[in-house]
Length: 524
Image 1 (cartoon, rainbow, N blue to C red):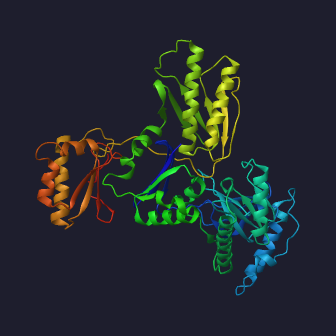
Image 2: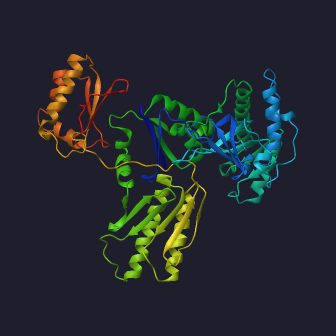
Image 3: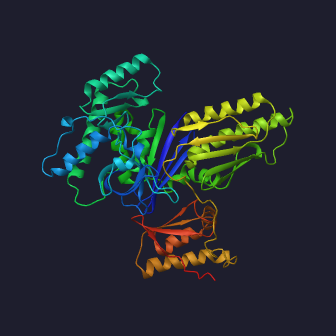
């Protein structure tokens, strides 16, 4: 299986698409102004104690206070709290963690009101982004994830991923980490560390320890609360850290700065694979060129079609996701209704596993498959779903079909599900139902170009239009596109963009910033 990563950067957002054998399996968007909060570490104050929930609310700068449960304080809380007081009490000399005294573990049966006080300062890490009406979820068990290792301050255990099956390899890794880890640090060895040399593991260990030192230094120097002590890597690097594997064929990036950032990271973790990071400089938008836009349009939305006319209907509520499987206009199999139902359900299991990753759907997912009467067919479907979900990095649990033909799935949720609106609102009528003559559209574009060149003095810009419109202005011996360039100069470039609606257009200057030339339409 060949995996390829595509990173599209524009002034409003960064979009990342991962394909496996050219099929889109993961898609993420992040606004340029949005913070990637999962993994961020804050020095913050306890805002309110909630004894009934055995939890507290902590202000970390979000609109809603973050939630911290007593059990999320962690067994090493006593050690961590004492060390934090020592750091905050001496603003000149940083108390080394190696000299911290290990206190007794915090009991699981305790209560938050006997452990914390209102206004108390805490070092917390975000483990779940704000979702719907809920604020972020926090933990006091700080960790710093790397490619091969996860560093856990104040821990003393070395845990090896259970996915590494070889007992000899597990023992080797544990021995190596015990010999190189600093005092008062715990380490989790990730699956990809299997077979790695001491030098590689030691290099990453030093990087993670340095990350901790920079974090605690910011905590010591904090002058106001809340203070962001450590910010997680950018979405592109963060995704690479978790996903990178030898099957990657290419990583395409269409922005120079992000390209350098990704190139540096891959060079750090896998120098021999640094050449797979490539700068995309094509004229077409990167997602259009690699057939990502079409797959996004067909894969998101309420209804998702898959093979032979069958389709899924995916609905989202506050509490759960509901998926209905339909055979559509599919012809019945020769072997009868049971064989037809099994075939449709197996195809649905394949598509649903992809959709869960693609949309990053979390929480409870209930799937209404087509009814099957044979127990062996229901077992076959359950096993197929479990096999498909092995590729999913998020923690999940799958139950066999109930007597009502429903399958229940729980999947780890750390951020809101990805929602992409694939419905297109007419850009010229804004939903009113009447538009100007489409034949006049090119005349209107000509007027916009004339205004830019002759009135605003902008000689170089790129006009993005729908591919059908692009085909129209490119036809003939003396096409409209060439006439524009002859009249206004070759600084006028026209590019087809699949993300646009039929009579929609966008104009970008030479720096990639959008120039707003759209008419304001009053909606009554």
